[in-house]
Length: 92
Length: 140
Image (cartoon, rainbow over all chains, first blue to last red; front, side, top):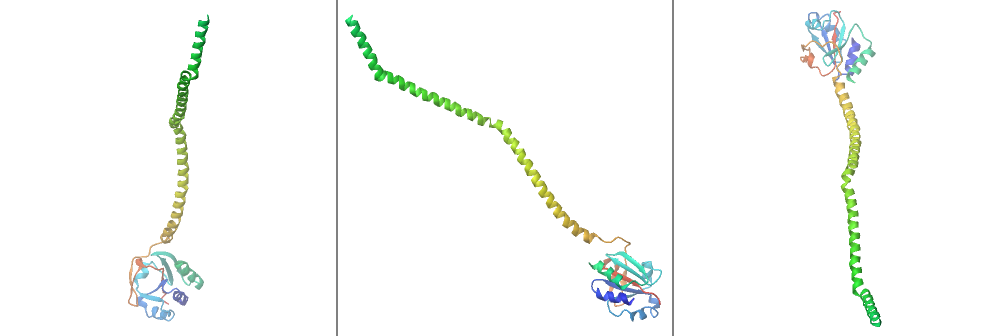
């Protein structure tokens, strides 16, 4: 996850990165995650219902959207180079 | 006999004199103008003949008309490629320009949500102007 934060900082202002966490388990997840996401480029959303809205049943999951359309979804970790390429292609 | 011959000579001399003076020349003058008149008439008729030829120009008009279509035909093809070239040139960039923004990737639409972010800002999923990565954090 810190890798995402690195890339988010590189593309700050070009790509919005929103980290979604369970509000009900903030102490277990988000508070700990804040220690990894320190660039300030990633914004946080604490809302349990959003998981269901995006049909996310397991974590961690990344959902990348362009123009309100989901273009890629992945589960688990993604190599830094692949994330950077995904961002670069989206803003090109 | 001498009288007759004198009279004959006198008549002959008179005829010769008349022929040498006015009588013959009058005839010549009258005949000369007549000749030019005739020539003029012929010339006129000849001129009218070309005139007729000119009036046959209507007959030549077909030729001109035939040339006109040729010019028209030459103009139409000349205009056609230009129009085609302009249309293609204009269509290519427009289509490209329109296609690129319209080339929104295919996929499921994000749910229409108004998210209250932790920093106090509001984010509407359907109004995002930039690419967005939603990172669903694990519990552990």
